[in-house]
Amino acid sequence: MPSDFHDPVASDVPVLLIAGEIDVATPAWMAERAAETLAHGELVVFANSSHWDMGGADCYDGIVTRFMADPSAPVEASCAGRIERPPFEIVGSPR
Image (cartoon, rainbow, N blue to C red; front, side):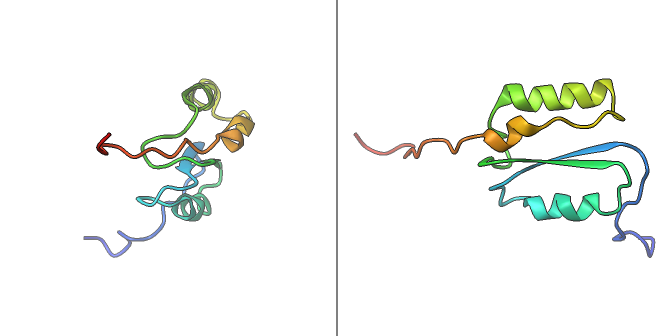
């Protein structure tokens, strides 16, 4: 492995990082850390969202679609902060 294998990626290319606020697999702090060396990195943290469920699919799709259409435009992601925690559910419990 090259000596710089574990060094953070540094880039000036527009990058959209998306994280879930309650993601235990890859916590939001990891994306925050990655964004530090990305000159044009935009981080969106989805409130009350996990690794596999980013809450509002329409919100997620809209953010990604707008970013892909124009990566240099400011990211409008206010909807990501309004995702509500899903209701508590016990799966597979006897009735």
